Image (tube, rainbow over all chains, first blue to last red):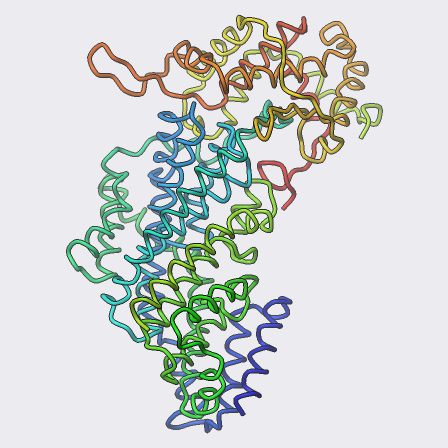
Length: 426
Length: 206
């Protein structure tokens, strides 16, 4: 039966790869089929309807709320001009040295990446950051890659991600945070090296563009002035509270929302802006929330006793236990998290992680190491991930160009993550 | 795309561009450059004028970058491009240059842009980028624009104005190539004629 379940999983991956089905729908269908194959009854204990769908769908509820709060805060950073001001100041201070501008935009992207993820994070930093970098001579692929590498460097501090891995892998938030702190230096070093090496390798680029003298209509952004300097500290507020004061994730993020609001908004306009940005946050968070509902359902399915029993011998046979082999095998498998592949953490990879833990093949914290390391690759280089597609297209290049340019760097980050995992938890 | 195929409204729109002065086109360039969106148009006009004067006064330097030609400029919305690596190179987009020459004839602008001058202007324009990239001229441009971002007693830190180097490059090209009007006017005319319908803001269809 295990082989049949794996074949069904492969079919699910094929459906996602060929885009016959949206990832979330494919995951739910996979979950239901796996549950039936594992011999789960329709209703009752360990059943398809009650366990997989009813209990699975809200299993990652805390993550969904954190995603929503992150999106809300992101919307506020945009609407209040905080993100734009950060980029403008960087260009003003370092514009005659492109590498300084790129490093500055990288820092902004990292800050933004701690607050929210996916395409909204890329937009927050990139809408002004990408053209600003191009305007000072940074080549387009490097500009798009800088935004993505920056967001990925902030990802180990992204509180919704802590919440996701904590809930999905049933680990305390402290444990997740502990591993993320170990992953962060690799992500940061790779991001800085990307900027330094790529700006040196590719130099600067200036184009005589036909659109430079066009009289295009004024954008909404014309209305945004500079945010006050103390408002620029907003992205740090949730981090300081969660890291420095051990305050839980959701209240920390709410504090960030309130700080952004009171530092940028007149009292009479506060409730209106809060509501408007909250509703805007719902729009941004809709896609990831749907995905997290589906992942919760899939996790519930692969953790059914019948599924664990069927998959355990197969997965155990191919999972390396030797630390060196562990690092080598999982490093070589990195490309499988691209193009919505089977190791994509926000797809079937979550199910595989669930199997690895439920079958007791690796300790949960080692699975955390594997999943977060792959997440660093997926978050930057996957040409189907929304942030990569958006950044590449906005810069005027293809996602595949960005993937090729960034992959060596994030592959090294994953290698670092696997080494830490093997050395610490195996 | 050829200039002879332009319809009457497009031609009228291009001819209407003549009424705007060169500084106006500089202002538009600055206003379209990210980080300048919220700035006062009067300030942008002042910066455009200063950058134009700075570029026009730049000492003539012989271009040292190698020159290569490509043919997909209209699709990419580009006339020329300077890249500093692996070796300083000016890439000229021949289809855009051909359209420019054709358009000049069609509009009767030959007295402003003599035959072959667009190619020369493109090389001169990119030579300024090379000069600003490698030499001390960039700091001089910043000082002349006078955008102070930090003051400490007598000391002032001048900020970078994104897009000002482009205006300076166009002004330099106008001066050394003996053009009657800024290449920015021609750029605006080409943009109206070519209307490359770019899906993304930086040159690739979505």
